[in-house]
Length: 457
Ligand code: GLA
Image (cartoon, rainbow, N blue to C red):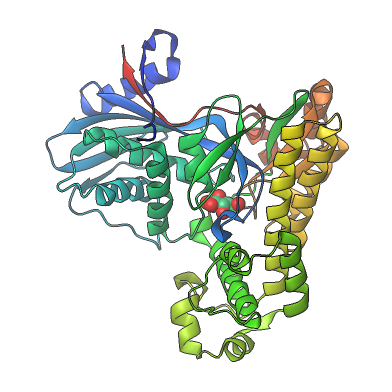
C-alpha cells in the first residue's frame, strides 16, 4: 500500500510551538493531548487555475502550516478551539455535522475534513475529539490556509479513529470534501499538503494523482509577498465563475468537433478525447470561440439546451445569475498555462545555464495570462509584481486563486538583500496597514515537508 503520512516521535524540549500548543490544550481542556497533526500551506510556482481542468501544476509546500493538538473523548462530540481568539470555539455532536455554505467560518473547514474522512471510511459513530488548532499561514492570502485546515482535520480524524490511509487517498478525499463549503477547487492544495517533501517542488498530476520531484535551480531564491488584499474564495463567486466558464468552453469546443459533449466537464478531458497537442488545442480555441463574451442565450442556442438545463446542469449554486461568459479568454489561459507548466518542469530537469532566466520568463508569462485572460489578478497584485521585477526578480506572478493574496518571485541569490529592501521601501513602507503586516507578508521560502503526525517522546 502507498505510504501513510509519517508518525514522528519528537521531544518537545526544543520545540516552542508544540510546547505552547500543549499548554494551551491543557489550559482549555485540563488534559494532555494524545497526538498532534500538521498540514502545510503551499505556494504554487506555476500552473494557476488549471488543476480543476485536469492539468498538472507545480507547487511546493511552505514552512507555514496548521498544527492541531488532539485528544479522543467519549463525549460523542467534537470540541474545537483555536489559539487565535479571532476564531471562536465550536462544539458539535459527532452525528450532527453540517456545513453552512453561506457562512464560511473557520470551523466549517475543519468539519469538511472530519466529515470527508468519516464518510470515506464509513466511520459510524465517529470518535469524539477535543482539538486546539494553531495556524501560521496568513488567512485569505492565496497560500492555502483553508485547504491546510481541511487536510489537518482529515489527518486528525484518521488518527483519532485509529485507522490508516495513504497520503494519496487522504489528498483525494480532502480535495473532494472541501467542496462541501461550496468552492469547486481542483486538487492542488490538498495534494501538495500531503505529498510534499522537504527540499523539492513537485509536479502534481491528476487522474491518477501522482507527484514527481522537481529540482529547482541552485542560485535562485523564491520570495513570497502578500499584496495585503484579502480574498476569501468561498465568500464570492469569482472562483466558481471561472470553473463554470471552463466547463462551458469545454462543451462548446466539443460540440464544434462533433463529440458527445454532455458528459465532458474539463478542458483537459476534451484534449484527451481529441488526441491533440496543447498547441493544437490553442488553434481550436481560435477557430471556434470568439473573444466577445457569450450571453446565456447564445450558449443555450449553440448547445441546443434550455435555460433551465443551463441553470441545473452547468451552472453552480453561486453562479446562477451570471450573464456574461468569457469562454475564449479562459480556454486560452488554460491551454497556454498547461503548456508553461510542462516547459517549466523540462527546464528544471535539463538545468541549462540559462535556467533561471527561462523559468523567470515562464512565470512572467503566467502572470500576464492570469491578469489579461483569466482576470484573476487585481491592481495591487499587478503593482506588487511590477515592483518585484524592478527590485531584481527574474520572474514574478500571483500565486493561488488570485483576486488578492500573494505573489511569488524568483530572485537570483546574490540579489536577495537588495530585493527585499526595495520591495519593503516601495510596497510596504508607504502604507501604514501594509507596513504593519510586513513581517508576515514578505519572506523567503524553501520547499517544506508534507503533513505528519507527532507524538511526544
Ligand atoms: C485555489 C484552489 C486550487 C487551485 C487554485 C488556483 O487554491 O483550491 O485547487 O485551483 O486556487 O490555481
